[in-house]
Amino acid sequence: MSRLIIVFMVTLWKLTGQGSEEVRLPDHSSLDAVTGGLPEGLYSTFRTFRHRTHALDLKIHLERLYLPAAKAGLCPSADPAKLRREMADRLGAYPADEARVRISMTHQGQVYLALEPLKLLPRSVYEQGVRVVETQAHRENPTLKSTAFIAASQSERAQLAEQNAFEGLIVQRGLILECLTSNFFHVRNGKLGTAARGILNGVTRHEVLRIARAHGIEILYEALPLSEADRIDEAFLTSSSRGIVPIVDVEGTPIGDGHVGALTRRLMELYEADVQRRVEPVG
Image 1 (cartoon, rainbow, N blue to C red):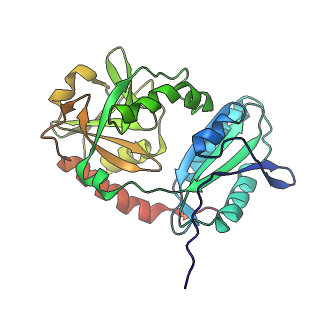
Image 2: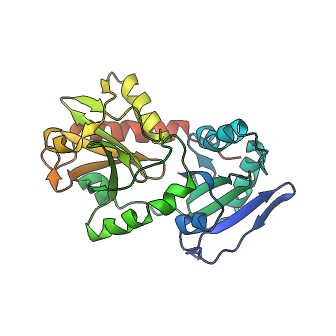
């Protein structure tokens, strides 16, 4: 009889010229907790597929770290090829069916790899949709995925459960730009809308836009005024770990008829099929 192994703690490695070494911090309860125990820098997070052997758009995730490092003249402690080898080795021995992976690079160039078991969202989330609310969070530099934002937005994230909300909106001058950990899309009159500036250009956001263009869906690069949430037909958020998640409630305002919309469902199906075609080996 097979034995089920359950991992509760995040495992963290520091990559060096000789390989990698495990790092112990006071709090290993989550990826955010571990990241908060490291020096500030940049990071990217994604999930694995096919029993921890594959990932999606890994090159783009790595570019989030290595391109800014090159511009800053840093010499990272591990180059992309070495990081991929180490990641494949660690994932191969990781005792979970799938993993959530976070790679981070400090402003001094030190590279870290953190793994936690992937906890898939309940099917009901995708079938029934979620509620989102406004927060007071903002990004100092929206184009960079900085670990400093994780700490800066902790209070807003903690309040989401109190408001029975799945995600928090980042709103500037009354416009919905994105969410705390995802990108935001809306649908009005069959057209797909998303903010063009002042946001982190998420990997999944990029793929959804590519899929939409390929299938003739008109895209409007404009942020939605929060005050007009009651005038749109559909909304959803995107992230690498969660894919496309329908939004049916914004600040207590039902979106459309309060159910997952037709275009959102279509994009979810197209995205899932696209993922299965394009996942690539980690190593």
